[in-house]
Image (cartoon, rainbow, N blue to C red; front, side, top):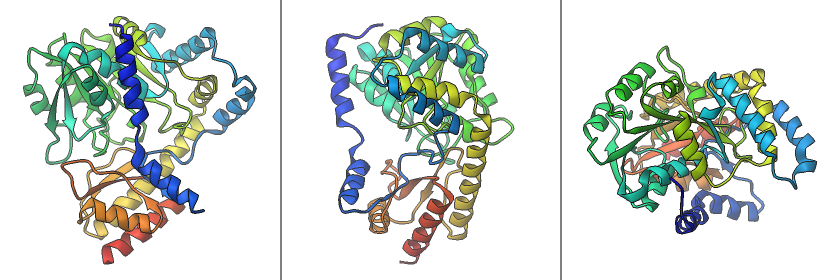
Length: 366
């Protein structure tokens, strides 16, 4: 289950390629003395929490140090208590993205087959491809949700893992917990089901919930969480996986690093700042409703959003829409084929949402 030096070098090459487009655009505008409104990365503009900021300010003097093993273990135990699971089921990483990459490398080795939705978050499939994986993409259904029956039908003897981003990025749609549990129960127990719950904290609905409890069953389930979204710590990079001990050990051996000392202390502090998390959720959900209400008024279709972003049909080629928005100093999400006219917009602060909606009305009229 370990990686060779060649595998690590290949992975590093992909890391260096990076998500360049919007960052380059932001850099050019900053160089001109302009500060663009960045609504393309699904960041939480309200974070980090006051408790996390205080923890970082107190820890910055130790920024020259790597976190001690004991300090990492304290975070692991805090996460285990939060999830009500054994500490040997928790693996931390520099964001859940690192753990997704590690899972891609782990499951994609030797041509392993991985099933994922199309479109979905590409980190895991991209890294699995580095290991020679066979990727089998299943289009989302008419409601832009994971088509679980079609994904189940796609399973073959060569299938090693199924990746489900729930809520899905970029569509924002969610699969209900009971539906997902039934789906996992019907799969061969040899398969690894990877459930990315980065946006679960923004969901609403009676049957919308985490499936982390499946980790304790006979099925091989890995659930991923992050501090980048509801906790507003995207720049600090801290995430974790929940898996049964054997899978957790394999994942721990495959990851490339651990969170830095500032991220570790901020994460521990943020876990306990429930007032901040509740307020973040309230604000983002209110702005989400505000955006979808305006989209409906303008006659623009959208996927039912359950994250801190909205995926909607602009009614024009996305390249044109992106250009019109950029002319108004607003950066929006990239293209997600085959949805050539659809755009993913991050839910910013209330003034940022107002600026976006004003620009959207102007673009719609033009």
